[in-house]
Amino acid sequence: MASYHVARDGQEIGIFEQDVLSSKVADGTVRVTDLCWTAGMDKWVGVGQVLSTVGGATPLGGGPATQDPVWSAPTGGDARGQMPPNHLVWSILTTLLCCLPFGIVAIVYSSKVEPRFLGGDIAGAQQASAKAKLWCWISFGSVLIPVAIFFAIGLLGAGAEAVDF
Amino acid sequence: MSRAHLQWGLVGLLGLVGLFLVYSINPTESQRFPKCPFYRFTDLHCPGCGTTRATHQFLHGNVLRGLAYNPILSIAVPLLGLLCWEQLGRARGWHVWPVARWISSWIVWAIVIYWVARNVPFMPFTLLAPH
Image (tube, rainbow over the protein chains, first blue to last red):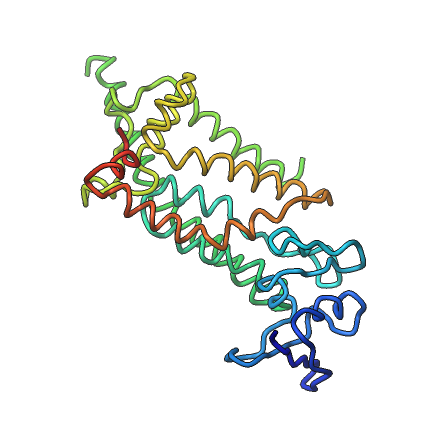
């Protein structure tokens, strides 16, 4: 069982076993935005990020703790504000519809939004959100523009045939 | 009408026009639809290859024939639906499953593996390529 050192504002506030970490968040001893570190990690990360990866995170502001690590933990709607949009739907659509690899870049950035936000890295989450949106547009535009031109030429050609140019 | 409403309205309208075009023109019979640029340059199938042909079949009620053109749609379409539902639910404060987080953890690998697998030139991988 891993022991996590927890720090706030540059000062260590305690060492907690992995399995009590989420209950410490629930009772307010530890905050989701505090940083924690355990042997094997190369840097301190937000408690929220560790809990969402390890599982068993308790919803903020009370409520029953869920056992299932995938379905637990909230996003947004608290003191940190709303989570920036992850644009995941658009990233997936551009990857499926626009053959080029730019869509995959968009998906990678979309995937980073939620973990960064939960880990307390609000600025990082916003950057990831903006980059995901950018790459969605790049992917979309790099296909849409040639397609539109191609289609327009095709329609013009059909129109010319119809009029017996 | 807010700016967001206008934007979504435009997207919806373009989507409907696109669906109408795919419904009325069979991509296999007409040259009107441009072929996938990746396929033209590399002769390999990208993860999206076959989606237009598949959509045409879906719009005409032939789900199985459509899936033969791009099997990943059987997973992608329901997941996209769940993602949209999650976004809608979060904006309204419903309790929704965090589907986006779950999908984010595996989707890049799934796409890369699918991209490679559908180009393997023997069975059963050829079932993943448009057929």
